[in-house]
Length: 122
Length: 98
Image (tube, rainbow over all chains, first blue to last red; front, side):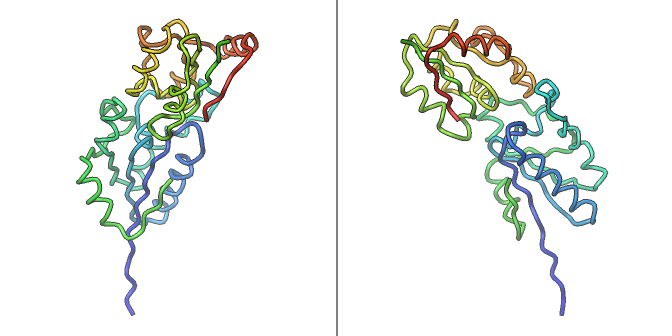
């Protein structure tokens, strides 16, 4: 009997600072990374705010968990995709806190996401 | 009697801010806080500017800066959390959109 590996994607759709979704999602990604399981990260809708540079959560007495995004490359998490339409809607420039982010148009974003068997949405 | 509107959610995610603008009156005050700060860059903000005088439109400065939101003084005024407390205490009626 062969074991088929399922590919997993995380779809991030929440802004980072008002609830725990973004932090929970990042924790899950790092756990997958720790066990050398391939995982891809997608950022859509208000989720795109998570990657924007120069945020200062300490101003509202929050721990800066966004810094942890910089650790993704050390866990070999390199498939990071952002929806261009969502950036555009929010008037955001492609100025991210990490490198290796791929901005995809809406169709390519969907095609890429659909290549995964399991999608975890936060 | 004017109303203080405290907007705490992103208009890109929910219709709370849109609902707020549907009932708002010219003498009211709007304060953007938490994820509501993102609304200053939403198309709906132009509607807020058309309905309310600029001097009654506020954003909590720390909440905006924490989110790397650039504040354009031609669109909105900044407010500290202390000043928000004063504003709430001075206002007879308020509604929180969340």
